[in-house]
Amino acid sequence: MFFTNKLINAALMAILANNMLLAAASDWVAQQHVLNPGQLGQDNLEQWTKTKKNVVLIMSDDQDATMESVSYMPRLKQHIIDKGTHFANHFTTTAICCPSRVSLWTGKQPHNTNVTDVDPPYGGFPKFISQGLNDAYLPVWLQEAGYATYYTGKMFNSHTVWNYHSPFLKGWDGSNFLLDPGTYSYLNPIYQRNHDPPTQFHGQHTTELIQSHASELIDAAIGSGKPFFVAIAPIAPHSNIDTNDGGDPVMTEPIPLDRHRHLFQEAQVPRTANFNPDKASGVSWVANLPQFNETMVRYLDHFYRQRLRALQGVDELIEKVILQLDDARVLDDTYIVFTSDNGYHIGQHRLPPGKECGFEEDIRVPLFIRGPGIREGAVENAVTAHIDIAPTIFDIAGIELRQDFDGSPLPNIPSAVPGHIDKQENERQEHIAVEYWGTAIAEGEAGGFDGNGQIVMSNNTYKALRIHSRSHVLYYAVWCNNEHELYDLKVSCFAIRTNSESTLIDFCCIQTDPHQMLNIFPEYLSDIPPTALVRMITRLDALLMVLKSCKGETCRKPWKVLHPDGDVGNLDDALDSKFDSFYQTQAKVAFTRCEPGYIISSEGPQTAKQYRGDLSWSHWS
Image (tube, rainbow, N blue to C red; front, side, top):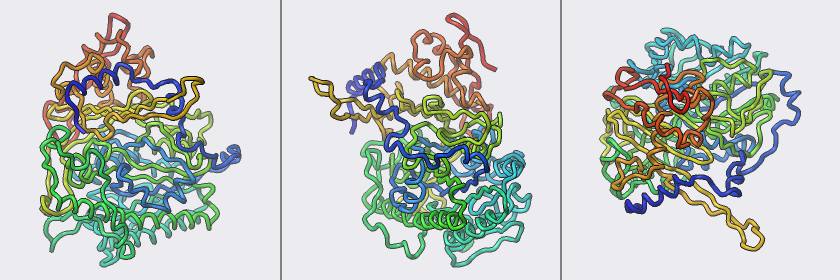
């Protein structure tokens, strides 16, 4: 639905002038476990701390959190979701695999790892090595803490049959890696076990192979006599990639196991407001995309079904892992983490299948955790990100947190670190910094997709900020061509009561723009923008200025950079009108040019001013 500018501005005035809920509704929304308060997974936490706990991480590839794929995974629901906690506001820092995975393994933003692409010179396995990260990432730290560590599946792009031993990835007691050029080949994958030469498995499905490899590694982990960490990374539901007779790679829809190929015949991409809209949305190259015709829409639905079918093998893998741990009587001492490296879009904003954008479809990621002390059947609303996973595993393992972590432990997970105080939802940051450099690539083949390299958009570099608090749900982005996006995604809920006794009857919820169709940045409004909107943007831009070059604590507490006296801790505090002059004088986030990687000289101003009282401020350095 589209609105006139007068209606837009009227709505903005109402939203921005009073963005707090009525008291009863606020109490309702503020509950951390909004769907089910849950039950503790283990009552005796004193007993829990006597032994180090195991961790099993299962990470799918390119799995969406907004297109309902999780609802097609009954074993995931039975064994992890119902037995654990859903982190409902979990995001990736970069919507593509290699930078996202490196952030997960290091607890650092991509601008601090400088792994910003999937291939050299700006990313991939070679960049991971050249940055010195092979000596400083999660499995190495866990081994130093006495853990046995194991891995199977995809690690990074450009981890190949030619460079896998130059050097070997450190930190693993046992491994079976997927390697390029067979990483994304569902039926002809290449695996490389420990330090053995690679083996290509012709005509064997990669998901069945990884199920077998995972079982072997879990047996080895259990037999090690140590607390263990096992990571399992199937490629589903990533697109299939094969070469045509040695030619260029072709990205097609994923290939499910034969027993799943006829499932979900009626499934289709959810017809949300942003699916193949009548009017273009977004900025930069996204704003110029044509609408899909009926043939293309049918193909998008087929592509979606193939993804759901490919995920069935992952769903079966989850059950096999749980049953194997249970049979060995170690399940009660093991945390199971299920997530994906990044999200995915299919037809939203007229986008062909792919990722790499800052929309919810691409940056919002599934995260479910079960284990000792984890509440069962609960929903956690705190804002979390992939940079929080390594700190969380440190907490579980009883390892003191590193000062150079940009993330912090997830809330409401028991800590084995002496003296650790759990951070509840209202004590956590309300922001996520999202970064991207380089190109966007369309996947699939049909109609407008040529199947030979597909559509490649080179100017896809941007810095973005995602805010999620009780008062604000916002996405703000600055692109390398200096176009801006601002979306208000808030769902406002109001209590409905009787007039006589004020008895609560129901809640009425109003969605502002959850599908990011209405860019409210002033440049895109024909009328004069409301003062409240301008005030909001100055604060968002200053916050993004800090986050785009933050390190360690400044990533976790960016408002302290802007207000070192501690008088501002969140966006609501910063919106006080007494700070207007301070924020108006800040340098603005901007690019001097579009680059395919992290090149600081192209990224405009790097520091913000600090507030030093009513009449003075100084530069942060």
